[in-house]
Amino acid sequence: MHRAHRARAAGVLAAATLALTGCAGHAPRSSPQPDTGATIAALAVSLVGAAYQFGGADARGFDCSGLALYVHERVGLTIPRTASEQRRAARAVPLGELAPGDLVFFHIHARGVDHVGIYAGSGRFIHARRAGGAVAYGDLSEGYYRARLVSAGRFWEGFPADAAPR
Image (cartoon, rainbow, N blue to C red):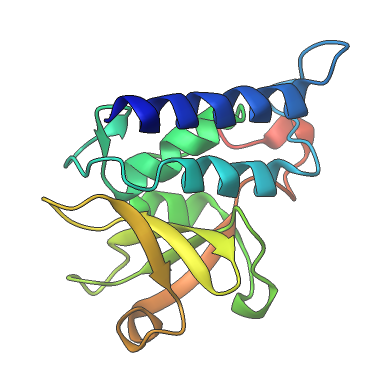
């Protein structure tokens, strides 16, 4: 990752951490704050341009589900590792009610879900799309992704504090 990109990502992560923890202390890991979805989306946006790496889930590179895992961990949520597991575990969200930070699930190469992105708002999502590429924006209104969109889900809202995803 380029030095400027790392610095920008670190700044966004620090701001997000401060926003989530406040001045008085730390937010509990199992109790996401109301603005967690927006923070997840902002963290994903900060990673646009990061390298794609099959099986990657850290600053060295990301695959699609590793990107989702990474940004959720940064806000204190542990989610499953693969796109299909993430879909099964997330609280379903109607496509007409998408909010920043929601996950959008696709079938690209397989019958089931095999790709995931993080909704950023205005019909756009962030994803790690393929080897040799980078984390980038996608557009849900674009024919390719619209035709392959399966569902959406959310981890940052709607779980009782004692039943947050693990």
